[in-house]
Image (cartoon, rainbow, N blue to C red; front, side, top):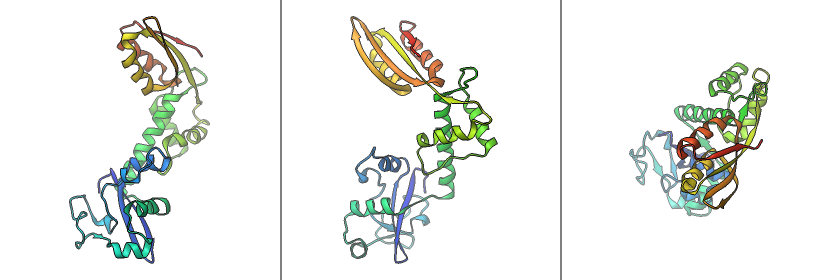
Amino acid sequence: MSVDHIIAKISFHGKDFEIIVDSEKIKDYKSGKISDINDILIVDGIFRNLRKVKSLDKGMLFKDNKTVLRIEDTELNTVFNTTDLTAIAKKIITDGEIQYTTEQRKEFLERKQRSVINIIANQSIDPRTGAPHTAARIESAMKQVRVSVDIHRSAESQVQDIIRSITSILPIKLEFKEIEIKTPIKYAGHLKKIMLDFGQVKNENWLGNNYIAMISIGAGQVDTFLGKVNGLTHGETICRIIN
């Protein structure tokens, strides 16, 4: 099974009812970013024994083979009182469990840890110097205090917990900077994309031939952001750090 696909299942009377979903989109569905469950389903149908399949090409689409069983409507109706795929899939996601292979769990944990570390590096500084911490320094501190990420929680929701765990050996605090930007209108479109990649655009307007905006970004990203802005606009943009 690809690390991009995971199995969700629910059990009734000793029998499993399984669906296969996109490993990234399921997080967006649970957080409300995706509302249509059909957008996260990899294959239409309710199955059994999906863990025996190594890829989507090995029988999963067939009604019944010796590896995977596509569950009949009669059984679905008996258990769920419906044969509607959307309704059953919602039930499985809401009340069932997500099943990871060993390979998937390792890969997802590594991805989640990288995400958490990158967020902390981008949004934090060393309060003694005002300088950002490197990702390597943050990762080292996590190893020293033996703190790990939770595969089931979003990276953003774990940042504060991780910081509290490592602050005893690594002085660190979250900090955001507001930067006022003034640039010729010809750069506005491309500059707006960069701004959205780095942080939140708090306000913007046009004054004469200039685009003026205020952005809030993590303190650890300021130097990188200013470098990208300067490179894009060839030094024609005025940036002023407000706080």
